[in-house]
Image (tube, rainbow over all chains, first blue to last red; front, side, top):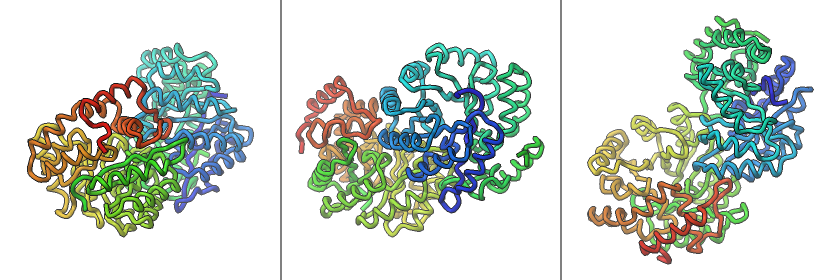
Length: 299
Length: 299
């Protein structure tokens, strides 16, 4: 279940409330595209900005509209007791697994992080995905910390940040992680621009921002890499370089939000304030890039 | 109102709930010590970890138990609408001002930050303190951004991070900020280890972690600096160097929490999990430092 392509849909807002129609539309699109799993309430799903009740509702909607596609649900929060509440709600909603990023405000020690995952591992009755996202959590996982956490019960997968661009360095990085985690724990790459490299280097899956809004190109890359057509995966990722440049410049969330808005998958200004979307000039550039890449109206 | 010493009390927890007795005890101690203001629900007050209802209650308790000492209340949150809710509650509680740190999960642009402060400035009927705390918010304020925000209505003060240790460099830094903010906006230093230097360099006040638990030494530094006895302020701060080293090593919050626990001002393990307090060895070292500095039972 923790291999292949996991697509992270947005949780679009309209007037500061979850746009349930837009959200369920995104989930249905992903199920229809046959992604391997859907991760609701990831960073792309703005989990950190939503209330407990909004998150409970979004988790239910995701499971209800995903058909037979497994749904993973993000349960991160700043306080352990809040995380456990989200865990409980995700389980009640029927999540196949939960995804936990160690959010931080005060910097966390490794012992804090292990304690947090330990609490979740103890209370969870579903598999747990370790979500390493230093750009948002400001927690740096050492390889040793992966090892400590992967030993806990229920840990099923680790979502690692982008791998080095050099294929050999990427392979070395994936091997180093593999060496410290039990065999049943899958390694999934994130950082969409390096996903092809990561998959070719031996990652089991891709936790993908892009796939949450535009599953087709992400599926092409994943299928090619997983079926041994490494050159094809790499070529498709290289073709998307102009898009990855926009991700790097504005953050992937702002870019996919603008794509969803442009494609009619989300209402205008769908991000939670204070996050402003792209400005008009940036949107025009994005539209040109999508057009050049043949990625508009690809549904 | 935005000069002198503002003391940031902890919000101690016991069994994952606010220990109201301990909190009101801290507030009463600060009022009795005659600090110039009390900032409830600062970073030291764990605002980021508390629920809306907990924060509403803590704001009320602070104002009720502070006597005539002005109370400022932290209103930060990840989503603008949540910030406005906290603003409303702080005003209802009788806060003399509110303190806003631009919390982030997704990185914020300068325009996002200005938009957030603009929303608060528009809705607030009390003065607003700009809370620049890059170690927790991961937002970097440029001097130019101070200037943009300080122009908004209701902005009364800027809480700046630690100044350079070199007195001349500190003076240059304070002058550079002063040059871009209107005269009615005060500049308060934080980063306790550099507070004496900051006050001597021309800061109007000190937003202090230490003062929330041990007001006496912070008052000595502040009074000396504000009354032109620069050498005395600097000497007292230098005397506290062993304490500042512990702040740097473990984070000021963990250290003051351990002090409060040791002094009977807070229950054991008073921080919100996943934050673990100091371990036994660290506590023993802290106790020795406090003993050597004559800072135990100083109430």
